[in-house]
Length: 176
Length: 384
Image (cartoon, rainbow over all chains, first blue to last red; front, side, top):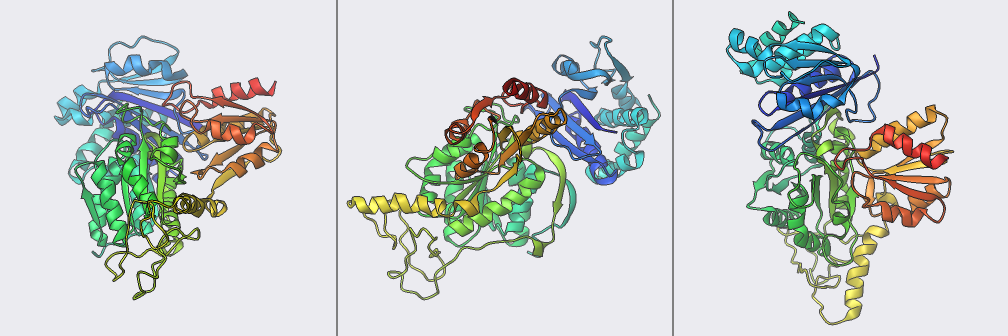
């Protein structure tokens, strides 16, 4: 595996940045890979626009910017116009199908996960929709090992939220 | 009070947190600041950790009082720092000039963000590069480091404290939102492997009227308060004893010249660069996060058979003109890359243009560091 560029777009409060941190932590600390994670967000925090970028590589990462995303994860309709042009030809587009409707087919695979409705119905908490998406992504791409991701979740989320986040991630592994 | 200062280990850590960890490892005892994106994580971390090692963090009412508190703490003998972004530096500049004039060791972290004015808080640009050197009035020299990764946010913060203490001067860490908010592997070494420097203070009990506590090009010992020294610390033109002199031009000349020479005389030991331009016909010159895109482009160009090298400025101030000249003498083309519209470019060009062709490549979008593909296009353009 060479360099994999991942771009995650959504709105503040959806765990966009946390998703990036989890992928980066799993790769860097538990999977023996190199990772760089960067982020930007408008200052509303909740409801404003949020973006996280992660680059995962076997080798040292020089250029730290996502230029053309191998994997583009869109968690809000608002992010489609902003980031769809950043996906690499033959890349993988992952969407929360409950929230992202305006995606037309193109030169990319689409993985559509109804993450928000699953999180709402099965876990009674839409806040873990991002973990369901990560589970589905890991299942489909084998980008990182399940064990590494679970260790990263345990190390990164508050103790009281650990079980809920692990449950959502494991539910995601059953999808895709 | 019992917690360790150095948290040895391997982490996937945010640059801003690594900066705070570096400050703790360097022996920082006091920090003051006013919250501002994208620097707040440093303040948060210091506010949590400093009291646990016997230090203190003050959230002040604004940036002006923050730098004032830092200067006061430093004169009380504490290793001190403030953290902010460009808008905060603009407010601090008067007191930064004071700190320079009375030779106050302190570290000033500027996590630069989209500017001018309040601009765009979470987007990193290298917009305040010259402000660090020329923002306050008068002729002076400053030291500024430009980290390109979370690891360097740790390492350079330690160096910044060491330089501040060794040369008795404010030292800037010029990071930006991109590097400050970046997470990457950070290795914190064992405490005994981290070099820490403490300022010289005069022998206890010496007669204050006989202590030359100022204006020594080899750095005067600092008569800190609370140790029995009496010292006159004035922003006005003063002599080696701190005594005001507002009439003799020769006193002003010493005041200006010795403050500058204190830095310039030690420029060689202050200057840090990364050179990778052996046999290169084209050299990319950059600093901070941009240097990573430059390194990627140079490596791709060499794979295509174009002899491209890099020169990265780790300390941008004092300006390492000798390093630029040395490089320019060995190459044909110099391409300067910054995440701005060309702030340090004129300084580089002034040193290099006598020996090589010099050009500037701005980012396609200010706020997004140059795409290695675009750098390659520029390389191919100038190599024709």
